[in-house]
Length: 294
Image 1 (cartoon, rainbow, N blue to C red):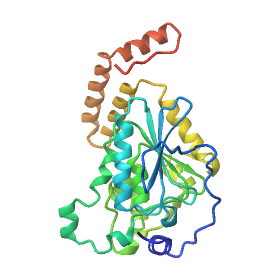
Image 2 (image 1 turned 90 degrees about the vertical axis):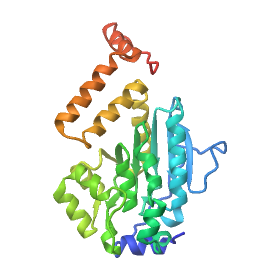
Image 3 (image 1 turned 120 degrees about the horizontal axis):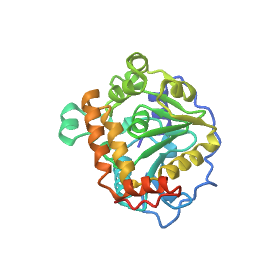
């Protein structure tokens, strides 16, 4: 396990870490009945108990993303994805760090052969493969793998003191979990090149202007607002939400023409569902819809 000193020295360089108040645990309580994990905390939250909350929990290492953490994260994501009562998932850290990068000490002695043989970083695919919406609630540092993890999510909300960056260039490597591929799709080629080739950090407000972040909130309000967003998503048909997520993701994977064809196919498909019928009928009758995920 990397110490705070190792992670901070390698990833943050000369950037000073500001002292931030301890995480506000008053809004969310983690119950003893949750699955036993060592590197994350898991809870079901929200007024309707339909939001899955995953908190990265390696505070002494600024939530550095070690292998065991990602195994647990993948398991928690898969469990929430399979739970019909869960409408959306929130991934967060603490007020000092969402995740300050990968665990450098853990990967220091890796080589090309071992990376290929063992499928290094393969566990990250559980987040991107999730069918339900995942929202990143980012406070503090989201650097290297931390920034890549946030970009694996469908929506990013940030606290006003959040810092994003891909500083792998400083330690003789490049992003390996999507940093060079997803970042240009969020912010454009020129900005992505600047961020990747310099290792410089960007703050929350700049990240919002670039389109990397959807909204910025005061630190103490971030998690509350993120859960509210997840609850809002949860008012819609789970089936249609899943199809909508697939359609938007397809825009990043194909040409405009192919994407439009894919969208039209899914749109047509909604007319075979009871939820589409109920939604339109409820609208005409001026009443709230009662979706059944069918």
